Amino acid sequence: ARCESGLRVAVCGAGPAGLAAAHALLSARPGGQKAAAAQVDVFERRTELAPALGGGIQLNGGAAILSRLGLLDDAGVAACLLPCERVLSRLATRDSITAVDVDVPAAMARWPAAQELALDGGGGEALAFCAMRAPLQRALAEVLPEGARLRLGEGVVAAREEVCGKTGAPRAMLTLDDGREIGPYDLVVGADGIGSAVRQAVAPQEARAEPSGIRVVLGVTPVGGDSARQPRERREMHQWFGDRAYGL
Image 1 (cartoon, rainbow, N blue to C red):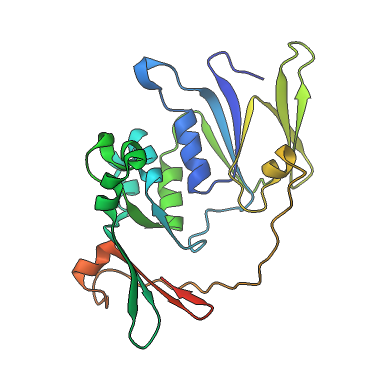
Image 2 (spheres, rainbow, N blue to C red):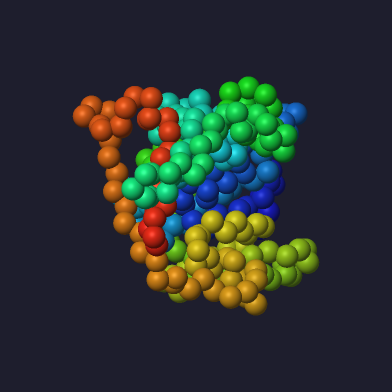
């Protein structure tokens, strides 16, 4: 299955993680080396990149990966990212007690293990951002490099390994939700969420995720215009903890 110039790879899941993996696999490596993959198929069970799917995400170490891939220089990706400079946590009581107050760039600088990943260039600007999942997903999809194919409406429900009869090398075959089997692939990346079919194929002995009974209600307010948040607060994450409740 291997292409002459690199691996043939399947990425299961077209969320931000799966799309970033596709960018990484098709990007030239340090020292002028060729990209690890020659072809990357990104499978997504939904028929479109849904505009209102998912909530906000926080990118710390992940932002450094986007930086190394040159994606922070893309205007579309950069427009999705809001710098996160402070995390303020309170207990939701009458006195609104402050539990945690974190200066994010300072915390990154103090933690040696995080400096290389979380600080640009190992000692520059702190790469800590908040983003809405859907706009970031669309921005990463719009600039997929040559060699990547986004396969919407094709969900992966199973994966299996087989041995190539000619070379004896292991390779992977995927089963799609319409019953088709597709492949072979040299590598399969599982970015298909909490009910991952790839994870089940690799570690079938592990228990599947089960509902916890916790419900999440998501609401989003714009940061500009008539936003109730003051300008100085727009680079901060405020969270409140109460009796069986949490707000961000």
